Length: 320
Image (cartoon, rainbow, N blue to C red; front, side):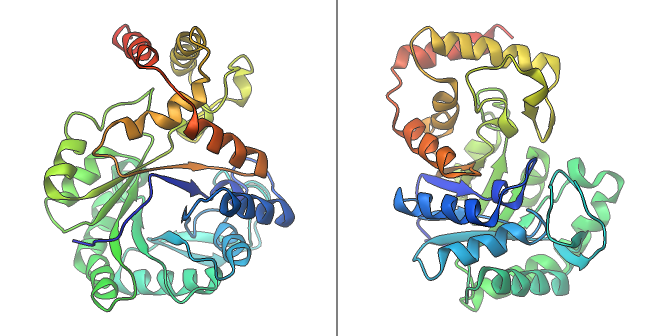
């Protein structure tokens, strides 16, 4: 197992890859610089975020800053003439992602990421979006490609010292449980499955990672945005799991917001801090798209939240 030390708080970069809305190069650069100034030392990215745009912008903004970086493999980027909003990203770079979990695909993806990031190495390499949730009927084929060659390519990179840790970056628990029994993982980045709205990782996955010595990074603490604001009245702007939030989730989030507001605690602060209340969670990462969101993130991470608030939030969940 890797001995890589990860900090409790990191930054996700889908926002500077133009997720949902376009961000200028200057604003993306200012966002990363604000994070560095605030003491953030860990950045998570992926080729999928803006089809190379997030990695490219992150590399340009970081320069040679001594930070930890995780990126992902499993998609290769191919030139395209398509434009407009694609896969949730707006005004992205002119590439189309194609899934490839083979050994050659993993190596090519890693090399391309280093080029965009302008770095000789990254610290953590994660196989991105394996599982039935993403691939449906194609899941067995992609999983076989990963197990038959892609995983070995990642291990070879680690054994050669090119990276410090390997793992998976996913949005579903089932693939985590399946792979833990079949390969050795240093890290799991799980998005959206251990939050105030979805605590499904708590019963089986978190205890299993703890027993196996797998570092657990929780991404998506705001469940794609629905928990990132106190005012939940503008329903059209609320996202859950990268889509328009369903009415049930909006109602639950509104109840949680009301419960935290009774004690003067912002819902986003509670959402950000919730995963780290479990000592078996190593890191939480949250996406930012402008310097103001970086300032908000730091304020939320440092907010004092009394135990009575957590009890009130837990009571709301029990009533669902």
